[in-house]
Image (tube, rainbow, N blue to C red; front, side):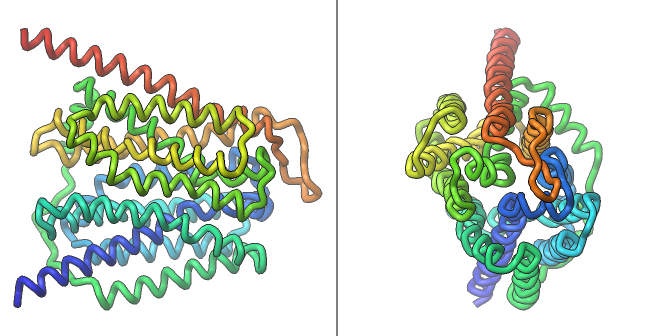
Amino acid sequence: MNEERTAVHAYLAWGGVALFFLYQYILRIAPGLVEPELRSAFFMTANEFSTLGSFFMFIYALVQIPCGVLIDRLGVKRVVLSSILLCLVGNGLLITGNTLWEAQISRIFMGLGSACGYIGCMKVAADSFSSSNRGFFMGAALTLGLFGPLLAAKPLISLIETTNWQYAFTVLSVIGVILWFSLVLVMPKEAINRHATLKWSDIRVSIIHVFKTRPVLAYAIMTTCFYSPLAVIADLWGVSFLMNHFHLPRVNAANVTMQIYVGAAISSLLIPWLCERYKEYNRGIVYSWIGIIICLVTLLYSDLSAYALIAILITLGIFSSSEILCFGAASHYTTPETSGTTLGVIITFSVLGSACVMQSVGFLLDFKWNGAMDNEGIRVYSSSEYVFALSSILVFVSVLGLVAFFLYRRGRQLRQNELA
């Protein structure tokens, strides 16, 4: 009877944090669906609009390791419920705000609130399920979260176009309140673990380990190469790019952009399983890196039909999910004492890099801007300006991929020399 109760509690805990992970993903991509309205409401340039994405990502990255410790100490339920409240405060500030700094602070709150989502899923899976099942539940949570934007994009845009963006975002807040009360009732409460502490010495050792072990640094760089296209295109700039460059209506542009998540959700389980089975982590990483470059070149410089766009973006999502391969490969260079914080540092590394790329797109749009404005005095960017700015992703992925390749080769050579 106790075993059955424990199993039920495990499923309820996993289901609750997985639903929160889905909810925060919808909040994460929501500004990209209303880019024209937000830039008009807050009188933002492209560079300023990019801060809504990059501020979210910066704070999300910086609190990854503290979030893990808080979950260890306070339990998943307390942290998730507090995180939902932070997201609601951020969303409310965005709805009621009138200035750029209010919009930016709102995204900082949402970044803080969202940070524990996937860590919480991994924590429940690792602590509550057997070794034969925990990988499935980790992958299933990621798949569920990635499908959130796909399911929510069309209803959100329909609501925005029939009412206004503030009303649509208010609906998101109402859903968040309902989710909060639901999780209060169904998620099991855990005891506080007073032995869990956040030690700077442990974090410092892991940071040094990443930068001193060249293969691990190479994998950390590659995670940024894989994550940045998904973050920049799917989370922020993809919808407006497709509207301007391919002249798609906003609903269609959003549906097509969200296909990245379809590819990522499907392959987040499939690619790691195949590479683990055949022990081909490095080959899978290299092929995926080449695949991302081909997809970006095709997307930016080709005249594509709607069906071809869908195919390219699904494929881009498939290759982007190879970030998971980098975590698996890097774990071979860690010890049980350093693996958790080292992987946390790598996550932080990848998200910070992606935030920098996200910000660079807005900067380059303003740099290339030809002076066009709409009737309200808001900057209007042309198709060629979008292509120019988004080409920074291609340059970033190509250059850093080569840097990672040479770091890895050099690290392997040094290791072989030491063994000899």
